[in-house]
Structure formats: structure tokens, C-alpha cells
Amino acid sequence: MLTPLQKKAFALHETWYFYLPPFPLQFDPKYEKLILNNSISSWVTPFIFMISCGIALIGHIYILFSHYYVQPRELFGVANAFMLIFGTVSIFILVILFTVLVMKLEDWIDGINHVFSIERRLIKNLFLSEYPEKPKPTKRMDILGLCACNFVLSMVAITTLAIPLAIHSKFDYIGYILDDLFPWNLNDDAKPRATQLGFIVIRIAVMSIIVIEAARFAIFILLLAMSFIESALICFKWMGKKINKVEDFLRFFITFKVAIRFVEDTSSDLLGVALTSGFWASVGLVWISIKGYGVLVEWLYVAMSFGAVVSLFIHALTLSSIKTVHVLSTAMIAKWRVVSKMAQVTQKNWRVKEIAKQVCTFTPPAVSYGPFFKLGPNFVMEFFSAFTEREMDTVIMFDL
Image: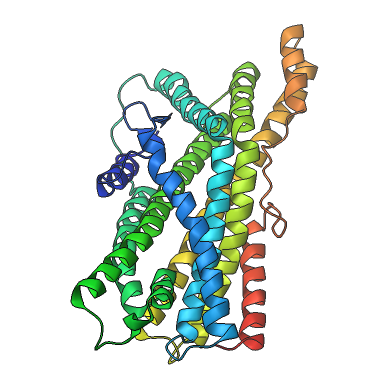
């Protein structure tokens, strides 16, 4: 069950983007489930976002080759080239993630809703039957909810500041295309005020379409991932500690496995892309923090350094949660295998013996996490060990 702060994070996400059409994926806080909004208006901004991303990819590649490699421009420096490369890679990853999600959106929604439902049923059937009176509320700090709310507010603030700063420093591709189409625009004396203002409005509009919709998509998916991992953790804890009968475990675990089957393929692809791209993004951001001092403009260097810290924090939080899910599920399966083998020997009821035989064949829910990282007891340590090794190689081999 989602905590009040987790629900508040989803409400903040919806409130901050009130001026946009509704997002195709919506979270109902009352019933704690995902809703797919298939109205035409909800798909307008994602459709425009995908078209804008395609145009931006072409524009970035054109500007990089024409302004930096083929015919270097005096006003087009290392910082401009770096930001266009960073934008190209980010847009490409977002397009892949969005495409993978949309391809199996309905199955993904069904699977997540099933896991939320199983969590509520476990608490209702087991906890309330054991403690019929309403328990006193605990004063435990909701760290995950606090992180979720702060993450939403931080992302909104960063994207709000990023657009005017990028326009001011000319880190957008559309500004260079306008200069190529209207060369007189480069001459300050011949630049009419109305035209200058019109070009700025066009640049802000084009950049806002991509940045704002990308931020809305990324925030929602990360909030949903945190809630899903938290629900899976609670399910494994309750199935491992509170269930006393093999029959009850079989019923809940099979239902859970069916729910996981809905999201298994999509989650594997999403996590594979997200972790692999996040790994190299963290390497790049830390490299910029080390090599970019005195080379990049001050605000860009501070932003990249802040991004490196946030990226490493998100990786530590997410990977620790994924590892905890793996450890709990493995311990739960090991416990019930022992119980089932004992039941096969001690029980005389043929039905209980058949159920115990099925439980002995169960394995922990397995999801692959990309080609570089294997889920296991040392998952987090191996990830950051590989990160440190790649970071050292990058710092030694490349200079800004």
C-alpha cells in the first residue's frame, strides 16, 4: 500500500503539469491502480514529442557535422558541441524507452495493478486477521516517500531553469539552424527587435516540447518504479514471514508469478536500457565534473556536477532496492522449499503433498538487467566496481 507521501508525489506530478493534456498513464490514488487513458487528447503531446525528438536528432547531427567538424565556427565551442552530443544521446535513449513501453503498455499496466492488488490482499487477509483491532500508527520515517516528493520538485525546478539557460548559452540546435537560414541574424546592428524576439520564442517553444514532456515521462516512470519495487518487497516479506500454510503460499505466489509474467519482458527491456544508459551517463557526468573545471561555463559545470551526484544517488537507491527484492525472494523460496519437502514426508493428505511438490519446483522471479550486469548477492558492488574501473579509464584516455 502506498504511503501518503508516495501518493503526494503522484499528486505533485499531476499538479505541476496541469497545463498539458492528461498523461496516457494515470495513477488513481483512491484505488491505488494504474489507468490507461486512451483518449485522443492524452496522446497528442506524446505524438508531438516523438516527432520533435526525430527532428531534433537530425538537427543535432547536422549541426555537429556542419558547425564543429566540417566547417568549425568561432562561436561554436567545446561546451556547445558537448551539450548537443549529450542531448542527442539523451533523446535517443528516451525514444527507445518510450517505444518499448508503448509496445506492451496494456500488459505492463495489468501486471503492476496485479502486484498492487496482491499486496493489499496479503495485508487484509493476513495482518487484519491476526490483529483485528486497528493498529496504532508507527512514527517510522517514510524515506522513499520523501525521496519521491523531493525528486519531483527537483526535476521540475531543473527543467524550468534548463530551458532559459540553454537558450541563453545557445545549446539548442534550432538557434543554429535559424542562423543558417537567416545569416543577417548574426549581425547585431541589423537585427530587428521583433524578429529577434520571434526567434527566441520559436527556440523556447521547440525546446520546451522535448524537455517538458521528457521530464514528465521520466518522473512518472521513476515514481511508478519506486512504488512497484516497494510493493514487491512487501509481498515477499509477507509471503516469507506471515504465511504459515503451504496452500496459502501456493495461492499467493502463483498469483504473483502471473502478475510478474505481464511485466517481465517489458521490465527486462526497460531495466536493461535504463541501467546500461544510466551507467554510461554517470561515467560521462563524473568525467565532466573532473575535466570540465575551467573549460565549461560556470552554471553548466555546476549543473553537470549536481547531475553526477544525483545520478549516483538514484543508482545507489534503485540498485539497493532491486538487490533487496532478489535477496528476499531467494530467501522466501528457500524457506518454502524446506517446508514443502517436510510436508511431503509428514503429511498424509494427498492434496497437500501435491501442493508441496509444486512449491518445490518454484524459482525466484528472474529478470535480466542488461548484458553488463548479472543480478546476484553482489549486484550493487559489481555495478559500482565496474563504474569505478570505467571512470578511471575514461579520465586517463580522454580530455575535454
